[in-house]
Amino acid sequence: YFIIIGCIAAVISGAVQPAFSVILSKAVAIFSACSYDERKSNIELYCILFVVIGVVTFISNILQVINRIINFLFLVEIFLLTIQFNI
Image 1 (cartoon, rainbow, N blue to C red):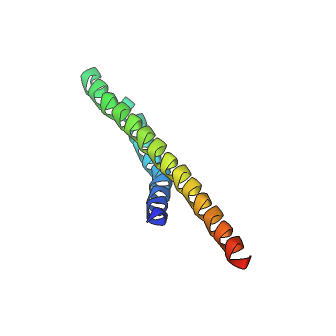
Image 2 (image 1 turned 30 degrees about the vertical axis):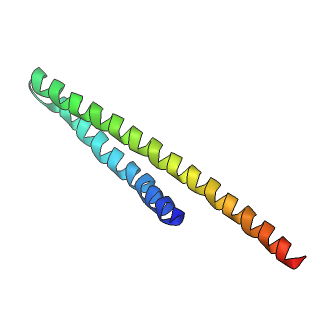
């Protein structure tokens, strides 16, 4: 169960960098637009997308850290049970 959450979070973290590069290239291309209003509305959209990417990255990194902590606790539990059975 926790491994699946960690894998999904890792895939999301890996997909963030290509998505960021695509959005950044489109945001830079907006500056060649003719009208000021068109540029302003498009830049506001891409600013919101940058914030969304930041939040998604934060959540996926937190999920990965939580997954590592839970896996470590399971490892300690298994180790303690193994020592108990050997005694």
